[in-house]
Amino acid sequence: MGAATGNAAGNMTGSAMTGVTGSTAAGSLLIKGALGALTGAATPAARLPAVDLRIQGGLIEEIAPALAARSGETVLDASNCVLYPGLVNTHHHMFQSLLKGVPAGINEGLGEWLRGVHLPRLPRYDEDMVRTGVTLALAQMALSGATTVADHHYLHNAGSSGVLFEVAEQLGMRLVLCRGAVTVKSTNPDYPDIVPTVSFDAMLRDMDELAARHHDGAADSMRRVVVAPLTPTYSVMPDELKELARFARARGLRMHTHLSETLDYVTYTREKYNCLPVQFMAEHEWLGRDVWLAHMVHLSPEEVAMVAATGTGIAHCPNSNARLGSGIAPLPAYAQAGVSVSIGVDGPSCNEASHMLGEARMAWLLHRATGGPKSTTVEGIVHAATRAGAVNLGYENLGLLAPGMAADLVAFEIDGPAYWGQHDALAAPLITGHAKVRHSLVGGRCVVQDGLLPAIDLEKLRHDAARAVAKLH
Image 1 (cartoon, rainbow, N blue to C red):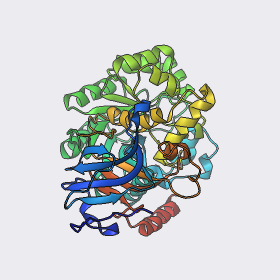
Image 2 (cartoon, rainbow, N blue to C red; image 1 turned 30 degrees about the vertical axis):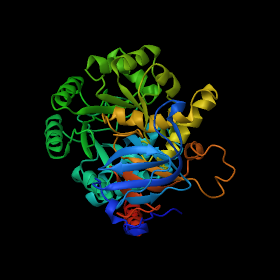
Image 3 (tube, rainbow, N blue to C red; image 1 turned 90 degrees about the vertical axis):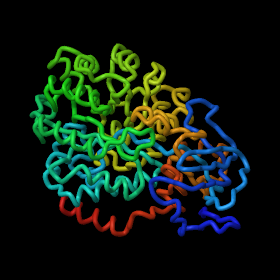
Image 4 (cartoon, helix red, strand yellow; image 1 turned 135 degrees about the horizontal axis):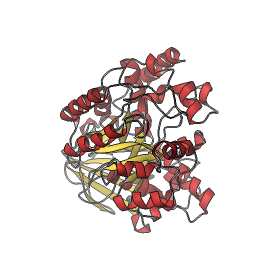
């Protein structure tokens, strides 16, 4: 177990390092003794052997071997650790953390899972449950290497969306709130139980208020708001979809939604609108560099070309797509076409792991199983889980370990029997998928410190989650 060490100037040590806990760093911090780093670039040049990393004012100042500590500089021990950029989770439904492994849906596809697990329990949520679920999700994210989370939140009957920002601020993590909604009863026969949660006008008013209160478009912002109807082809009216796009762009907000998750979805869109889902999105102004779409499992070659040509991003969710039997989105083909493909864990009720590093490992393995060992590389998947995620969320200075970038990074500890005999230390966190987070920093301040979450009482969280599960069972 690593610990922070002090120099002669009297730096704080161990769990007393409150000077680096929070959301923004002002002083100088040196991460010392790392075995090396993967920078988040997509090529083998992403590899850096044994390095130290200096942070000043929340930004990376320099990365080099054997940096000497400055007077008064706080030093964090990263011996037996590998540095990655903070992982960027580009699609989540955090409140679902209280719905893991519900027996009614454990062996079902998307439709039956919705009917058996999801829809019956949504009305039972209250604001305390939302807070508990979000806290649990962000704790899991932090302890698996994520520093930024985009949450597609559509449960608005149980309190304000502001709860999500409160919890993220408590932990010191970046949160992108994708404000979801359903404004019409579903016309999709596969999902007939999806009913309106809000009127369209009320949705616009709420998004306007959310954006005014919480959205920060700065390059290193801790809070962002995104326009995100639940599903574009049957959760809003087509004319509403176009109005939402214009609403978002007029306010400088990005756009996000689910698309083409199952073959049934593609069939429905063809029968209802006489076009493919991506074509439908193009007709309603929902493609572009300010849009990223979750799942995208079933696309035609023509659709892939449209996505690439418009700069639209994709959030790849391999675990939940496998868990629900929805299929495998061909990440290597999308990347080869020039699409920015990032990683998302999706809902904890259909991906019980909610483990960002494990999700990235699944992406690394799954496509090798279907396309051969050349289909993915360690560097390419780390890039998808870091820099590509930052690009899809519109963050210009996240997702890379380089001077001038925001100091969002993770020190993965690779020590113990699982790593003895390891030949490639830099790949080890990804190829094992379970490396412990020793330190995690956002803007130069610790979110995880010596393997612990200082901002969270985990024992209380455990009891809160158990009480909520009893109510939702």
